[in-house]
Image (tube, rainbow, N blue to C red; front, side, top):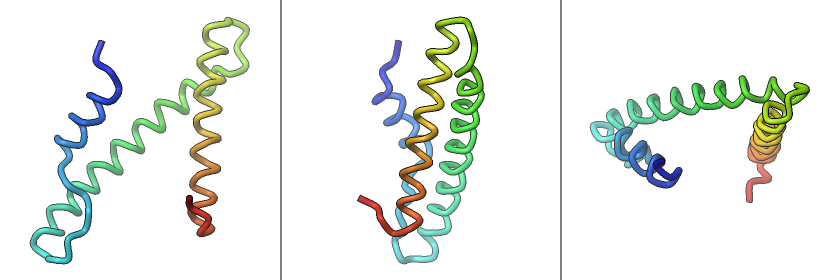
Length: 89
């Protein structure tokens, strides 16, 4: 099984740089890379959300995974809420 760090590294390499550079020609490509990154994040969050729906299941393994996914979504929510209020760490 491939570890999460390797998957992240490969994904970042496939997407390309997303940091603004200040040159319109370079930033045009980086904007396209950012669009790819946003799409992937949207899809992955949707995948986590689907698992979170299992948090109240009676099957132990399904409930455990659902609770873990639900907790992760709550953590993302709290982080984003703080970030949007200007309280980022």
